[in-house]
Picture (cartoon, rainbow, N blue to C red):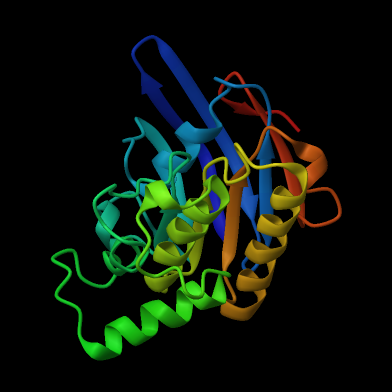
Length: 210
């Protein structure tokens, strides 16, 4: 279970104070206006923003003392964070080896994951040769290769047309069930997660309001 208890994050003159509980294995979605603090909460859970106070735990483990690399968290950023000079296979492979010293077994695992997210045969394409939805899938494959049980998705549907948004939600839900993941995502389009998410909460002005 993910527990966010009175977690306070201050950035310049803005303060967010969050309370949220997500059951283990659930798909939870945060909706709300831009600038409301959804991404800030994801970054705090991942360890990229340091809370001033409060509690944060997953599976009974206190996350606050842990560095980002030591947390059981994988995150997919809104802008995908793909390196433009690396192929899809190499970008995904950064999850296994930041130096890209990949063994034959590593390459096989990466290719299998790219196939799993619908990118079979695209291993050697650069990000500029992929659509927005395909780049998002590369980023998702990279996150999945870390085998961490808490997956954070920051606006994974941005820039996708309605059919592609539905495909992405279906893919995330399938991977969640197969890998027994807990997923927390943000979206501007709550209708896309209706009937799919186990939990939908609204975040505004740095608060979980509903």
